[in-house]
Length: 527
Image 1 (tube, rainbow, N blue to C red):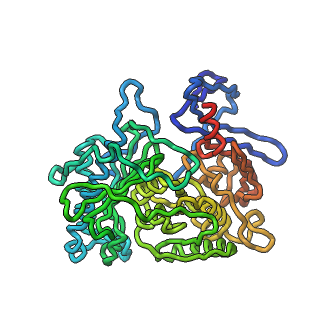
Image 2 (tube, helix red, strand yellow):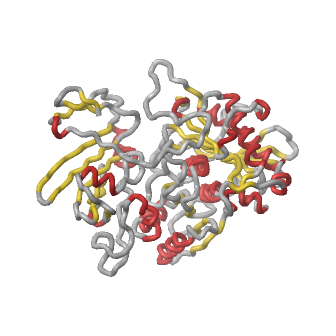
Image 3 (tube, helix red, strand yellow):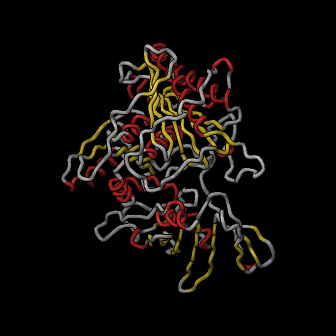
């Protein structure tokens, strides 16, 4: 918000963000204050909105979110502001993807060649006693080769790697990367439509590109010898969204392959290439033979790890789908990338992940899954957040196979009414335990909360402190947002917020146009 005079505030177009937030606060029976944020993008109108706001009531609203975590030592995240119109640093989408494919193959070769040495040598643990935090020489060596090779082609590219002590370029680890691997490539088309019909531009503004690297996803599985779970992940986010990625397979099941890489671009589909045991360094195309789309009435397979953190959620999913009369099975799988690739290929219907995964674990798999028409969100149905505030997927992950949109919507809706799932929002002040007037029904069970609406425009959950501040309430310990008081429409979503112990209430309205089917359709017919 920019003040242009004592009585007028102008709201200028901001990037690609489309959204509005309205808060109407009630105190007793009188309306005490109104605050509005309106973020808009008028690409063809080119106009500015102005509102008359009396000076005494003028206010700026700021969303308080988590403390930033900087995973990359090489550079900071790109800002959300538009690049300079004079000379934006553009790079070819296909050339970038080609280099990532080749880098993933090099990383996979490194992991394969160091397999015995790394697993029998010194193993460090980032967190004492946690086998999932294992770190070997294969992890660090693969990242040095991947990152150094990519930076050799794109020196100013922003790369965030899991092993952040090795995100700088090292000439000794650089490998030559081809930029023509996908020229004229015949893509495997999406199995189903995601409903968004997003097209990734052929040229990308480099300042808006972030590359997430997990050089060895599944280190625990690697150390324990379950090598088919191990992957090398390179994902590209553009303006905060995963758009393409390359997943290296150091230990492919195909006996003819030395290493393989699966890759994809949202709006195009996915593909696969490999280095054969006979071809040396020649990269050849290989077909997919294991792709399946889910249909109504098909058996439902639910994959997860063996962590106790996710068992209650898997139990919930089984309970939800049991009434359908179709077969339901559980599948224990290791490594985040492996679980999500199983979903992408339709080999499992749903995958449920706990809150210990990070953005470098999900960036590449998300791009491939969405490229095939699948879906991935947090436990409550909102997209995963890719920016500099937090690298952990703190609200957990749900992924569904192409064609399983209905199953995805059912499970996230159920988790908005499940006490175990809602408990992860306790640190934001949400009251999810039994025993209150607003969050439980007459039988004492937890009532569904519309926690997908009570977010800021970036997608982070809002807190009881935030609502208390905006409502002018001095003391607030918790809040509830019952689904029964929510409004979900074609062009807006809203809900009533109840603060405890004061009992004050407010109506919160949030609109993110790019998340609304009706708004996306209207942008095509009347941009």
